[in-house]
Image 1: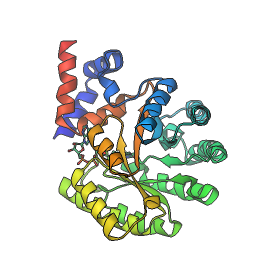
Image 2: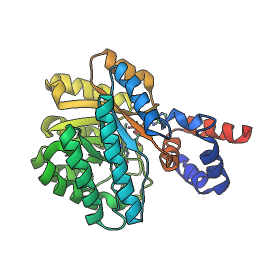
Image 3: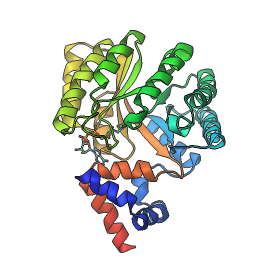
Length: 304
Ligand code: FDA
């Protein structure tokens, strides 16, 4: 219901125009987005590092259908890698294949990924491939498998617990001992491909997480769900899973209290830090996840 309302808002030109125009200047988009420039993002990560957290930097952008633009996005990621190295920040990168040309052709996204991964390897920086809507799942995993053959665990995929197919995907990836980020999934999906009930998504998350913690090379536990985090902590302690096998991951600006608490208690915590001028789709997904976020923005719209 809430997601549908957000989608309605996202399709309402006046509202999205307002959010696009005012989100950064009045500051309400900055709650979830580190800024529009790389300098702003690096500064945010310096502060996270200071607080004992690592980061994953995401240059926002998706659904690029022009080959030149996809190449430019890849070029920007090369600059990001240089900037990470220059600033000596503890940070890896997250990329979306539709930003790198997947909508044009898989071969273009792969070519761009190879440029990024070659440089990332020089700097020993890990590259995470974000998972997008379900029409891209198969291609994204195929790209990951190809790149894993060339770059090993310098690259890792994301799995989403809301998809029925994920359990089988995980089984088929396990022989690679991959570095996997597990999340619930952020896109509007039909009941033919994804669990419609949140309780089933959560149950599946726990099932997949236990398998990952026991068998994967490395697990990014990407959630703000306190019940799941409690369960993960108990499971990790019971099975004596070492700190080198997992980390918690959360989004920039969400549950900062919980982020700080996990660090205080000695867990590794990575914050996903998005930045760039194309922040609207990311921002709208965050709004759809929690009613309070939506009212917060609507209040700003009416004030404006
Ligand atoms: P859930 O939605 O149940 O929320 C649990 C609690 O977290 C809420 O009760 C609330 O307190 C807090 N919370 C969650 N979302 C909030 C919000 N927007 N604002 C304020 N509070 C909020 N998705 C995807 O499809 N592909 C991907 O590649 C990624 N990558 C990714 C990386 C990382 C590091 C994280 C943490 C998440 C993703 N996601 C993602 C997003 C993910 O799929 C999911 O949409 C969000 O994490 C919200 O789900 P939770 O697991 O937090 O649980």
